[in-house]
Length: 463
Ligand SMILES: Cc1cc2nc3c(=O)[nH]c(=O)nc-3n(C[C@H](O)[C@H](O)[C@H](O)COP(=O)(O)OP(=O)(O)OC[C@H]3O[C@@H](n4cnc5c(N)ncnc54)[C@H](O)[C@@H]3O)c2cc1C
Image (tube, rainbow, N blue to C red):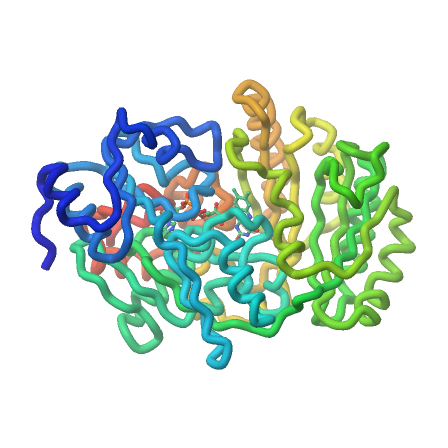
């Protein structure tokens, strides 16, 4: 049983980590998150070093009526990790990744970043599906689902979760797995941060790389509709070891981009090969020829470099806003809407990403996890405004909303991937999860967090 940590001194005495308050030298750095548009001032930041620290922080928040928020990697779009005048449970110290190569398992601290996870697992030629930007946090990404380049081969991050160590709202620390608290384990695999603070994730690992094959073909924006259509048609016939994506971006000033094309708006058709170079070349051939790209990067690269390829386009401190959609198909009319909307963005960092789902993602039963979305869905679309300043963001936020409105009639509903929502209202959440899943989650929430302590998130109200 955790003793009540009523005063700040009680909290400091109870914690092995540190307590940061307004006015402290490191306060501003500690409250900053990835989205530079979020500027909130927590009353207390508890930098936790383990489950006992998390329990002490929860006790302090309860005794003082402070709203609780949890910060993993700080990449949540709407800044749910930073409570205005509340208590932030900062998991940044919990970033250890321990790999057991024989058992093919990784134990990952609740505040670790994808870069740390990838680096530790790749030392053994292993990996687990995670996101496409390496400074994203494992915590928030996994609890919402977690998709990335390995998803067509091995499913979502949650599909590879073996167990989790969780501090519950009442301060108890439990392990959730298929055999211990199975209902909680189900809810953690997609239900977001609603059910407790995960201090450690245990993942199953797969053999990956260390060298994989990148195929990136960039087509100028004037031919966006042609590029997206060609990609869609080509992606329909891919063998299992190829992972595709469409990124409507501006060409980054990267070494593989000819200087005259730096910042050129266009469509990057990406096909990553996890098998042999020959298989990759064979799959790439017809798409490459039909695209007639402006430039391309087709080369073997380390898996960790693939995972960092999009990092700089989404740098720390950028002002951001995002909305997502799920599509059951990508008909020509939808391609045309996307192509027509692209020139409307102001910031060269704003982007639209279209990731096809399928493969191992689609082989998991809908009710096997709490992931918000059907496994039969064919595409997830992320419409993202990113700008160097708040003013430009205002303009591109409008672009995101109007683009989302234009695509909504073709989408499966207003709900989408919970981790892409910059605003998660109850209606959108119910639409993401569907009625049955939402109600099951609400019942589990009522059991594990009846007071809704963990509500600074895509919140599921206790039944
Ligand atoms: C640049 C960028 C790229 C992205 N790319 C992808 C991608 O490729 N694939 C993908 O699936 N998603 C992607 N996302 C979305 C990402 O999954 C979410 O933004 C996610 O919330 C980030 O998690 P975090 O821990 O970094 O964020 P945080 O802001 O720290 O956390 C978000 C919320 O998650 C909860 N949370 C976090 N950690 C814990 C924990 N250990 N225990 C309990 N609750 C916790 C809390 O409720 C918290 O408020 C991307 C986001 C960004 C900004």
